[in-house]
Length: 241
Image (cartoon, rainbow, N blue to C red; front, top):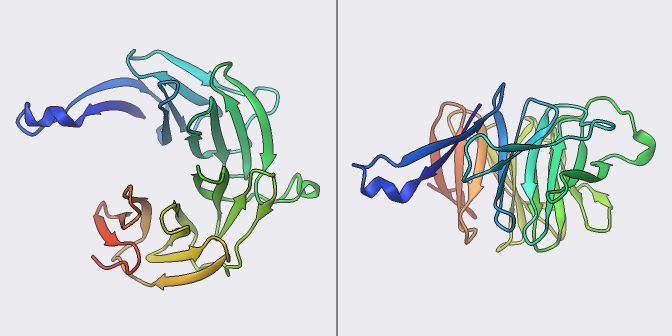
């Protein structure tokens, strides 16, 4: 559960080994982290019921994001710092989303993702990943085998996509292509955000299940991490190596 700050540029001065510094630890492991450039805070979530906020230039100096009267209902699924605002978004595997003000460390909004208000106590819904679209202020989450989109107006929509055979392990938004990429099992799918339809489906492109993914800043390449520890770089449109 250790969180480190790594100086990659120092590797040229240290025989190829970058210097690192531990800034804090979680008791049972770290699930997701995000950094607020506007407020210089690192926020991390693990298996605890609260999120941790770290001052990156002070080791061990942390604050908590905890709503004791209405806490998260399960393990955290993700965390995101909204650029240009003091807001931090956290989500759990039951579908509950909380918006926090980093200045006061208080929860300012709670809502249930992907479900209507009358389904306030549904069977457990497993959310695998969280993605925030800065350009439209929308929240995208993988709802077990589906994808949910929560817009700024508060409406939750589900793209017209059938459930996949495997749970969604990663969901990414490509701002350049205006599309969503999802990973499930050994497959990668690309969805048109405006139409909510599937545009590409690449099957069995890896030798084992995909566990995580990321895009480059131009949206041209996708980096895929697998269960066996391998890392691949693929072209976004074709998924070629």
